[in-house]
Length: 412
Image (cartoon, rainbow, N blue to C red; front, side, top):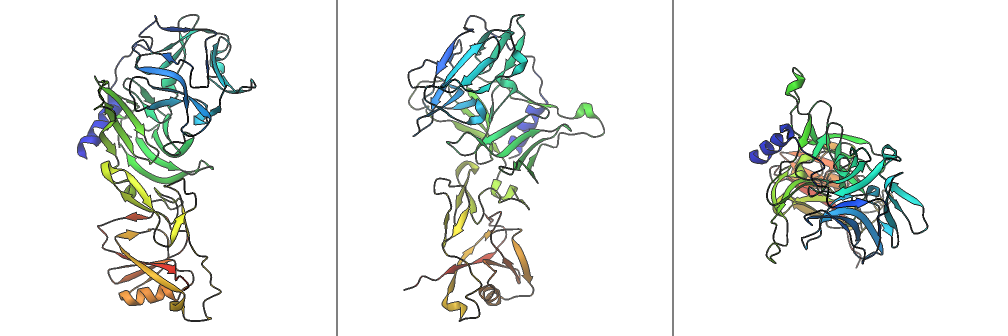
């Protein structure tokens, strides 16, 4: 992992002069428009590598105005308008001198635009071979560019300035803002943080920090992240699961080159990197985070629990029974409840009581007899009783813990 951290810090500090307007032949004139349907031809860069157009959201009659790689079969969107919210069929994106690029629905209601800074000053637009969509003024100045307003991805030559950010999408197929942020702080540190939705409250845990700030000499501090360029297609994406990943894809039409390959990712184990006092962790409440291939997290509800939203595999889990204290004192708890015993699983920061010293069987019985106890964690002669909702659920093979998860017995 030392390689990836070092590489990212190099990206933070490198500075390359770039010409935003690297091409002028393939300009997009005022009055040009795109319609949200399957037939509309997108606006292509001169090389044909990138396109600005509408992409249909899978399984829906809605479309996303976006920039994407145009030559690879694995459709990869690297920028999107309207905060990722799709629009209905028949919506139109058009270029005009007053508002630059505007997006409106079939009834003509404006949904999004490039902003007031371009008012009455746009001459034409360019979809650059770098993947940067640029609005050019009548004086040939750059009025607006997509590179200055990144979504969840940056490309080679793109700069992430101080106080700018990448925001993960909500899920693999939902492009609206998710919970994970990559921020370039004013002190020069590049950090990965989580944020509550919909309150947009920053949780207090950074799960990555580049440590490129120098309080003694600001000149030594990082001040922007620049993604270096290469021959292949490259992108740096903050994925919906919170992992920052450098991908590459060969510039080939061969059927053998259909997928992106991971070059490196941060952090090594996001399940263990995130520990939130006021949040659910990587996965939803009562869920458990596991690390799979390529350091990607996946979430699984524990036995006796199921997803609240079956379509959100990373969401919260609910118990398949209604925990109640009314039943206690009216019979033997062992007639009502049993335990699913699992190892190397914990939900840190959900404790409400610790028993020490404690034997394993004493720990199990203490949870059984307590109507507030949802799970008991036994380790090193200590017993931690935990309450619902459980947060920061993860598999951690270094703890040597045993979890007693209380579940309702099935009536026969």
